[in-house]
Image 1 (tube, rainbow, N blue to C red):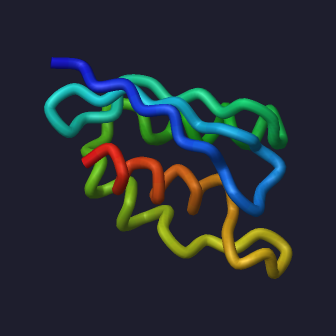
Image 2: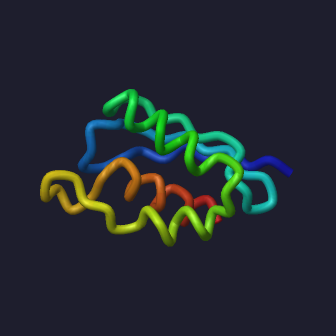
Length: 82
């Protein structure tokens, strides 16, 4: 079963991240806003990865002292989805 989650990003240039998960595997990630090349890169790197593995790698990444980042917001969204 495919689960779709829309998560509002807080403290980053991206405004939202949309995720599709199937049995705990990331099938699709799409950021709204943010640095297009970077968010596309992050989305491509996590595609096919277990959500738990992506969370472990991305959680806590900071962007310019903001206390969060687009990858960190993706980790938060994945936690919410699980």
